[in-house]
Image 1 (cartoon, rainbow, N blue to C red):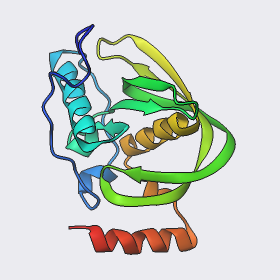
Image 2: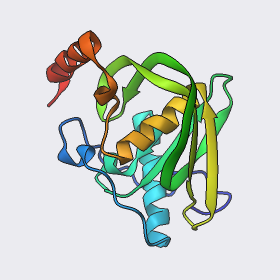
Image 3: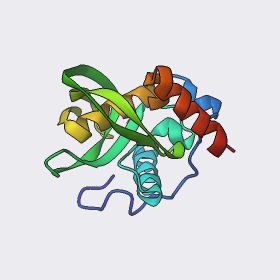
Image 4: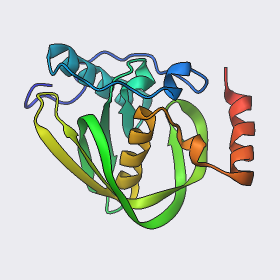
Length: 177
């Protein structure tokens, strides 16, 4: 991603992988090459996220099994957080547990109340290999946890239990291709 350019403006929109795609359930591989291909992937991820109306997108959601995600997400005070993380690691998830509505571009049309911690800290790298630490609270903290789950092969649906899970899975079966 070039300095000064709008994220995704040079990227191409890639098709999203939907619930049931085996790649969504597999842990992603570490990035080992911080090169032009990685920068292009990040650009494509931003373009794909924006085209789908999301606030975050993990690489495996467009069929690339690498530990990369992008975000353009507000927090609860409506402060915009824009960026990407390569080889992210969730180092802290703490604070109060909040059950809030959560959706996913890979499970379109469905939202379910999902428990998450109110605060998350993620460490990783930029596309150029520079270390970065991102802290989020509220909705942005939820986003960071959600995207880290994707890279570990999980979906927010996996966090649901009991009646909420049964209800969500029933809805997924109705909308799944």
